[in-house]
Image (cartoon, rainbow, N blue to C red; front, top):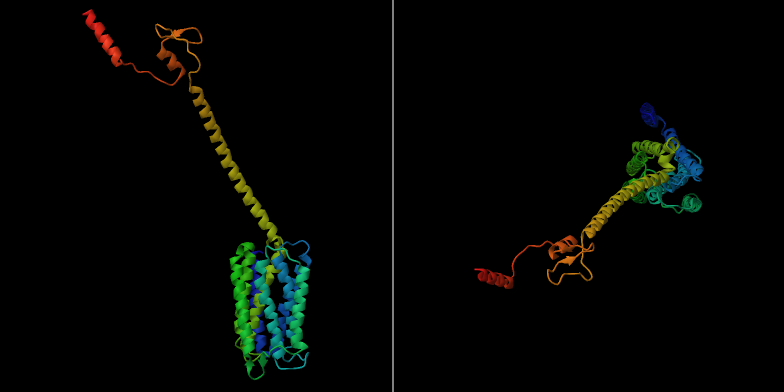
Length: 355
């Protein structure tokens, strides 16, 4: 994305949030409808993107996230309809809306935690969808049909201890999701990774705000919804926008990683081949040196024809040579001349006779 376009998008988001914040002071119900509606549209958009990309994308982590946000969008829609003042369900204050909110955030936190573990895995998305549908249906039935889900909000008193404990558990899920995503950051495109981390941190911040409100139309509640809008917008940028503008960064990220790994492997192979080539050259030089040394090494074998009187040796060409000359020509030995003791005595005796 071009920098001017990004700046305009951020300015538009900031102005929209400012307008929503002012609207929330005059019409909290409309504020809530717009805030939740924006997030619901993005959640269903993520699902539609994943659904249409499922046949050719090899990134099962983000496909799973898109499928999970379908159920987040469904539960958030019911949360919107059950909100105090909407008049769609039988009014129980803000309890049903708070219960549905809690279920949606459980699904969201769990899916964000699961994504890093699925980035390099192949899963059956149809089975995942069915099991998530069953789990979501059971949770929704516990609120809307069986009425066995623990109370989360009491008018005039605020949040119950179960709601606060559940929000703490969701915060732990989000912290774990942040940690695991950071540890497996090499599986992500760099820009997508930063957007996912930002969305997790913003969602965590919103959950902390939702732990402290006493009135469903209070400032903390509205502040949490504003931060939720930003977190979903960041998620939109990391999933839908990146997937459309740079599909290799998201849908084909594993293929891209395989290509990069293959290039790195080819580079290492070339390096190893070069090392082996040099080793072979050194080996050939060594063999040549050894052959040369062997050629220079001369040995004496067989019967040598030697004169019985002068002790000269006849070579292959019929020439008679002194023993030291013959041996020197055929070996690497050199001779130094001296006189042995017996010859010394004999020579001295001969000198005495001459005198």
